[in-house]
Length: 475
Image (spheres, rainbow, N blue to C red):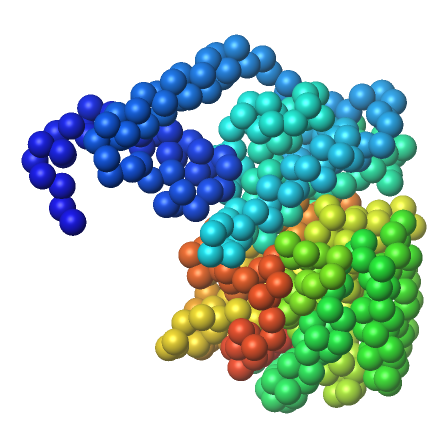
């Protein structure tokens, strides 16, 4: 029913205050849009506006008396039961574990329809959140925003606690992301120079991609890195890859019970001192009930499946033994959702042992393709290495011309490629969509991220693009 002119005029006086207050509460407490709708009765409506104005004034008063808690350098000695998190190249901070758990809980708040309602970090009022729990009293504004907010699949931080003793990695004065400025030693993108591509691309199997994702997302109810059965998905990948001729599949143990899996093809005449070409995706999953149910079909069984399938094609075809000049590895990373834990440990292990990496291609959420018409959509993330990103764009356009190609930024701590970039290696990441794209899978990080929602025909283009990249980089 429409309001009369009189009712409309009566409402105008408090319209701004009412809207501001509703937006404030909805943004920071994630309530459903209709939760704060004012009553229809005019007298009650006036009381509602007065109450709203009083509460808004109180909130603004808190903001005026707010003092900054910002901290960009870690303390000399680690606080008890805390994690050392890096949020950017100039912000590293110890976060108490209870505070970390509390803040991450904001990322999985649901609305009244049971839909996950993430808020971007920029919309989080750190002062209001801090007042909600005393354990946040010493946590900086920037940390609260980064942990309570979320931009798509972007993790937004790297947990470097387990290497806190390495001063070169924890000091805020050290220049990070050395890999972001590496010059590319790759040849010009030229499909004509790689006639083997057509044969390899024809080996991409939609049914096999579906098989891998099905095993990871249905055989294991959850692959959450802290769940009781977290190790099982890693050992399944190891067993699956071990069946391919000349592929070595080994476990790289972490400080939690979910190892990374390293599947490797070593051409004749190469060894661990030879620069390696890497493909990667994270094997763990999460949801609003991570310990019991987190299928993670798109995030990131899909990316893991593509990396494994590409390596299996290179093994079955024999290309890796006759044409490749460099070893090729497919990595399945554990604990990505906990702050890039597995990839960070592996990247630092490679760095400390002097391992060379010719290039790293990370695959993040590549199965969700909701468009009803057209071909696949492949998004290349611009950061942290623009040269690598531009090269990947050229590869996709030349080898998979039917794909719609996008490019966007993601930000620090986006996904596992940042672990290798911080270690000084050249990296690039591709996904179906960027973290803020309107077409991003709405089911990620929920119990509804299931295999039935993925498009494997379009996902196959990611395998073709990855094969093309390997041919260009490893030949």
